Image (cartoon, rainbow, N blue to C red):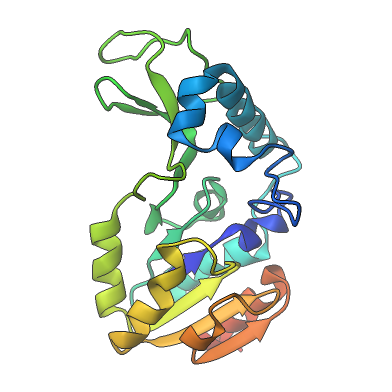
Length: 230
């Protein structure tokens, strides 16, 4: 099982979740990433995510060597490889990964708060858009897990953690739960745990081994080792 965070997409030009000043793309989290923010200022939230989609769909944002290495791991590893990502971009898919869980949602999808329909291929979204299923307007929200909401597919993730033999964490800070606790759960189930990061996360004691450096450099090296290509 591979857990990926913002650090793996940073080299593709997507900014990490928030800076040292606590701001996320110049906004406080409470302004754009909570259900309360969406209820108070939907236009601001729509605009914020429309801008994020525009960035993701620009020619300058492409999968990097780490994304491609994980896709190769899925193809060449003798066992099963499952990726659980905290990222809402589609860079893993564009690199060729298939066994993937987006625990925090997907930027290019919308969800109807009235009927629950999830639609793909979203480029822009606003309060005037109509749900394709229930035909109501003003009911579509970004298909994103906001602060205070439960991540998606937690039962499937729990199964992976309970049965994996190797757990790899890539580009995660270890500050956001429940993902920050995954390495400990996997270790308690008997898995070997490996951290790949620019620097030590806030939970270094949960890992048997750690390697530090840019994801685009160290992830391909580890994949070479795991597939016998080194």
